[in-house]
Image (cartoon, rainbow, N blue to C red; front, side):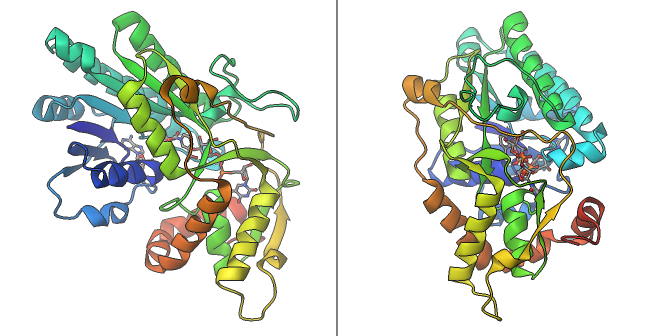
Length: 356
Ligand code: NAD
Ligand code: DAU
């Protein structure tokens, strides 16, 4: 048994589905079901006794303690977080509550449980913390990619809260001996990605005939990784990572945002041409830049390759084609996540000018 937190979100649900499809152990999935958590992502597991879903908060120490005592997992994987930079700019409270205080409460519950285990089980136990490359800050255009030695320079409330959680995890290892692993991954994309983030927002807006809002000059660079590759990296780190170590995970796919948006448009032109025959790129609209917008992220993923033999399986071309096709094949999922609360967010972030 393993315990996963945030397993109804984008990456967490992909992880749970892939893990169980590969025939690994059962999963207890603890998720608060915030706006980003969606049980429909896990619909394929209905009636599967290997998946135990519990709605709850990682900050609820008594609940986590009960789940640990009852299910005796060999590992806890922490995906749960508030994850959207723009939301953290509008209000950071939930980011502090979940990403910092929640991680602290989770660590304390896990530490208390771990302390009761026999020595052999203590040694085999793992706490794997899923984090981000954003903790390293922004890179100059010609700077080398982030290695695990890069200093922490978070710039947004979101990345600052994730950086704080990484520091807590590190401290619980150094001070208390908890066998922790941390992964710092670049931008993911793929199925079940909530359409507040760049790629799924562009796909759903394009299909709805809405503007495609590009922040600033669109030349900000991100390093894109297909979500299934992130999940395989996490499985590999869990299996063979050294306790106390951090592993950068990335796709060797640095691309400016505008190029991403044009790629999505071209794929849609091919797979679902507009009724009027005009290109989707005509919907591109430049909007006000994100405050404090990080210019460039890039991951040096040589450590995980050298030490654990992991490399991504997808190229950007194969991954983005699969992703666009997945959104075309799942209009019901898209309609379901675009609820009233989603529309409120789009109106708050983009106003009448774009997207709403
Ligand atoms: P997401 O926003 O799609 O999902 C987060 C999930 O956590 C949701 O199911 C939500 O209901 C749950 N959750 C939120 N607060 C909770 C709480 N207090 N208790 C229990 N559950 C709670 O996020 P995601 O994109 O899947 O990201 C997952 C993790 O990976 C996050 O820690 C994020 O920082 C990290 N990460 C994301 C990316 C990316 O590109 N999306 C890249 C690197 C790292
Ligand atoms: O790098 C890893 C991080 O990637 C994760 O830790 C975060 O959880 C995840 O949300 C993501 O953060 P970004 O801010 O990079 O992702 P987002 O999809 O919000 O934006 C990607 C880029 O696209 C960024 O430069 C901002 C830009 N953008 C985004 C949106 C939503 C636009 O130009 N227009 C938009 O409407």
